[in-house]
Length: 501
Image (cartoon, rainbow, N blue to C red; front, side, top):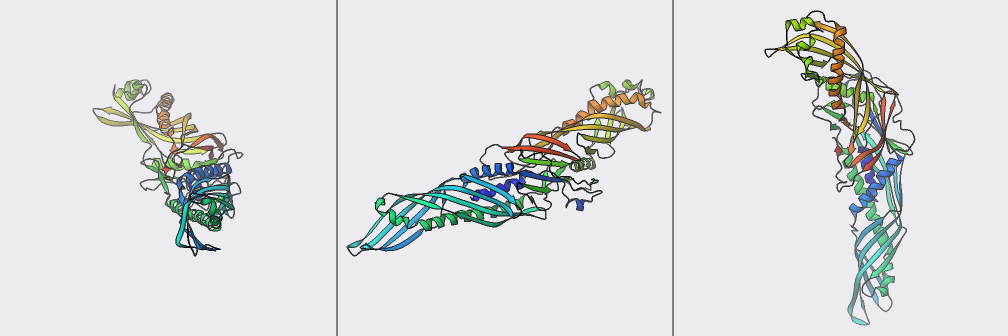
C-alpha cells in the first residue's frame, strides 16, 4: 500500500548513530566528508517500523475514492441497447494479512500480500426498448470485496551532498479477484450485468493504489531532502547530521553514515585532532535488538574541543561545601605567607582548562585526561588579586547511560597530580596543598561536571519514539548502544520532526 513507503521516512531520520573513519589533524572542510556516526537498523527494526506505519497510514488514507466513473454499453436481446454506469467507487477498509521489507543490492523491496479491501459504489442502468416507448432505468448501491491483492515496490536510496535522495525503481498492484454484491432496485435481476464491470473495477483499484504509491514516494523524497543537516543541542553546539556516503543495504539491515561531530552554532575555528581508527561499524551482538548506535570517541572529543574553544570550560568558584577554604584563614597553616600578607581576606578560585579534555574509550571503560589551571584570587577591598597559579593534571574514569533519548554520563576522579605554575606568596609546599585541591576537585569540580554530563546530549530521534531496553557495549574507541524502540501513540505521526531535547 502507499503508506508502506513511509517506513523509509523513519529509518532514514529516526536513528542516527556512529561509525568513525577518522583522520589525524583534520581540517574543517575535510571533516565534512568523513563519517563519525552511523546507524544499523536490523531486520527487527525494519519490521517494527513497517508494521507500525502500515496501521497508521491505512487509517490516514481511507476512505479513498477512486477517480473513475465507469461506463459500459451492451446490446441485450429483446431489450435493445443498455447503458450501465458505476460511480463513487470508494475503498473504506483495508486489511493486510502479511507483509515484508527486504533490503538488498537492488534496492529496498516492500511487499504486502494477501491484502483485502472493502469498497462501496453506486450503480445505474437505463435502456429504451421497442416494446415500450419510454426509457427504463434503475439504480442502487453495491458492496465489493477485493481478495488476494498484492502491492509491491522497490526503492532506491542514495546520498547527494549530505542529503538522502529517494527514487522509485519499480511499483505495482495486482488484484486477484473481486466479488460484487448489489443492493437496492431489482439488484437480484441485474447482478449478471454488473459482473461485467469486474475487469474495469479491478483496473481502477490497481491504478488508484499504484498512483497513491507514486504520490507517497514523491512526498517522502521531498521530506528526506528537507531534513536538517544540523540539530541544535544548546546555545553553543549543534550536531552535524549530514549524510556521508550512500546507505549500505545488506540482506537484513540498512546502515546510514553521517558526520556526527559537534559543531559551533556560531561558526568559529575549532581545533580538530582525531585519531584514525578503522572498526566494524556497529557491534551489537546477535539480531535481538532493533537498532545499533555506535559512537566513536571522536564524537566526544569534538564536543570537548567545541566547548573549550567557546570558553565554556572556565568558571569562578566562590562557594564550596567547606566555605572556610575560601578565606585566607583556612590556609594559614598550608600557605603561611598568604595568610600573613592577606589576613582573613576572602578568596575565590579561578578554574580554567588549559586544553580540551581528551576522551579515550577502551573495551572496558571510558577515560578522560583534563589539564587545568587554578588561580588563587584574594578579594581585598573589592579588588581581585591573583596570588598563585597551580596546574592540575586530572585523570578520570567515566560511565555512560541512556536518559530518555539522550546519551548521558558521569565521571569520577582517579588520579590528581599538580605543580606550581607561579606564585606571589613565596614557594608553596605542594604536598600540603594537594589534599586540599583533591578535596576541591571531588566536591566542586566533579559534581559541576556531572551536573552537565548527566543531562546528556540528544540522539536524533523522531518525535514520539523512545529507546527501550537499551544496552551499552564498550569496544576499542567506541561506545555502542543496542536498543529496541517504543512508540507512544499520537495523532501527529505524519508531522514528523527531529527531537533535540
